[in-house]
Length: 194
Image 1: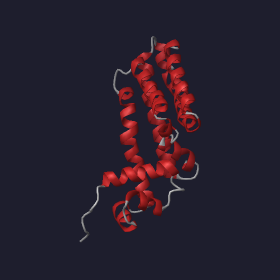
Image 2: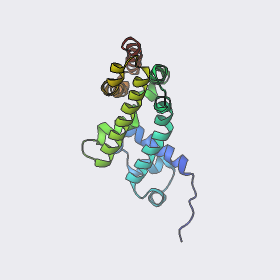
Image 3: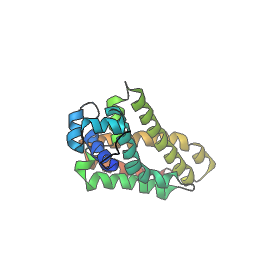
Image 4: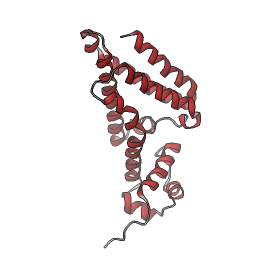
């Protein structure tokens, strides 16, 4: 019979998430994770199976804490221009309000660039994220569309807008202010292109 866990899984996941977010998956050693979480290697393996299991759980926690709330408005039926602008304003504010945090980028985008070309699970997670953002933006663009043609073009516009948003998340590593300015410009362009 296994012993019950003697640690708070959410606290451990938050600590691990921050370690991976700071350094990336490959540069974060198990010793780093042990130091960050305060847990022994055996406790980590018992709870998560492996470093990769812990990383996958931390990435899912990041999604729940950081992505779900930001995309929720755009994913609702009836989303439109106000939700599109709110999403871009949220990103711009995050880049401006905490440039140190903004310079960490997005954990999913970081994972996409670090592991996506050679790791099937990371690639699948990145593609799911890309598809989710694109679908949410397309939903908002369809709601904001003033005519049938604009509604029909929502998917194509959403793919372009998604690429710009991911570009802003990458740019935030180098220049959070410029990333915020890009989000502001994208929001302004939305109103002009309806």
